[in-house]
Length: 213
Ligand code: GAR
Image 1 (cartoon, rainbow, N blue to C red):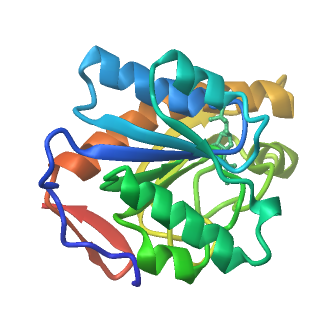
Image 2 (spheres, rainbow, N blue to C red):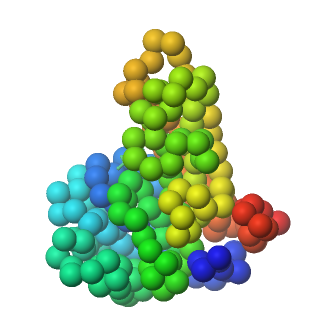
């Protein structure tokens, strides 16, 4: 895999995270809280949004975290946009990149140049329901158990090695919205824990399995 690193535990202390967002940033807030509580031994070096109106930028600013807006619409090509992302992440000394509601597909160009492994949180039990509106897909499908997944990002959408998963029940009275809210609670617990795992265990990829030694 293009992004695989032999880099755990990571050398810098505390390791620097770069968080990429597109929207409200509740998972970013969960990461900020976990660092504040001492559950995640890391520092967020930069929060980058691809949309100037991403609500999460305010959470970052309120926490005193440097922010940047790198608007994909301002670039003539995906590679130029991704090159700007890589440059900003590298400049911030980032060792692990965390996608937190970042709604742009990242190409092999980015994954090969990123200054560390790229993690993503997705609101379904992958490999079920990749792509957009995963919670709505799960609800419409009528599954009785849903959940969230943290995985390594690879060129194939939502298909990288799974680091951690959490399940929630689906009730008959649920709507897609109530199910999404139940999943989000789990995302907020799962993502910081999974990041901590990547930072603290010596891990490798075996086939498509993420294995902590
Ligand atoms: C979260 O539910 C996250 O899992 C999802 O977007 C939401 C972002 O919320 N991500 C994806 O669907 C990625 N495929 P947030 O901005 O409040 O963290």
